[in-house]
Length: 227
Image (tube, rainbow, N blue to C red; front, side):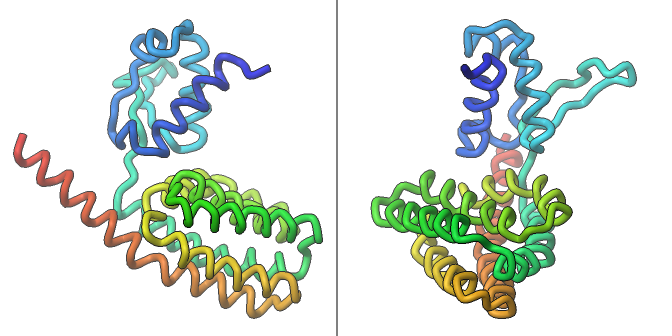
């Protein structure tokens, strides 16, 4: 049975990833407690989970108590650029190792997520498409066979999902094509091809993603100037 903490985590996580709670939004325990109809204890625990996932940021005093409060972690162009730097360094290696170590069960799981992403693209369900693409990348990490590399990638997964939620609009068919080619390389155990395709995939999606977040940041700056 899902705990109260997990229910709050799930609902807040979705609101942050969908941008219903925008970056910089203050999150007050009392307000959230009233909103979800729970005590402040599960709310406090949920915020700690979300902080570990880099979705919220808290300022705490030296004694560990809450300081200025908790806010939705900002996610701007600079954050996206850093994320792409990390992805470009790591994801080609993940793909190369996955081509060598993947299991038939993992290939089938990749096919399932790819089909889900295609259906989402056809129906315009951006949330389902982003979730399927995030899951696809997560399965690749599992398939690489390296516990160390998986541990390095783990903190990036939530940021990758946050990125996909914002950038998938209008690009789902293109992403599905990239993932189809990558899957074919994995099926044939073509490690070098998989590595190249993963690198091209990251590089090709970098510029449009940065452009979107540049536009977002400029809009926010203009809004602050008008206040």
